[in-house]
Amino acid sequence: MDFEIIIKPDAEVDLDEAVLWYETELGGLGIRFYNCFENALDRIVKNPNAFIEISPEIRRIIIKQFPYKVFYSVSGNKIFVIGVMHAKRSSRFIKRRLERI
Picture 1: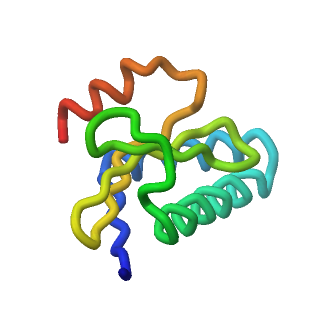
Picture 2: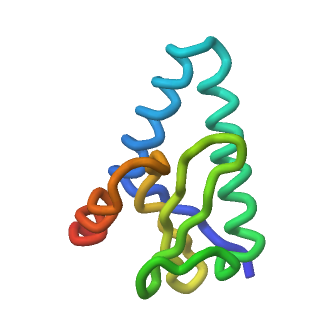
């Protein structure tokens, strides 16, 4: 099945902030982070149900080489990215995010 990836606006903000932070830490690191994020999306598309289910219909994948998690849901042939969060951030963050979707 071919999947369409939809990155929700809040997740876009999360991603932009992470890329910007890494880029200001070291030139080129933000691009590397973004490429690893894209790699995580590719892994999701290949097998969306392979990753940890943290609540009904919400799954999580860890971005390789970076301490970030991508939260997503699958509905039909669509994958909705709902958050990109640092691994040390409180789980309350994603719970509040889920309440808004």
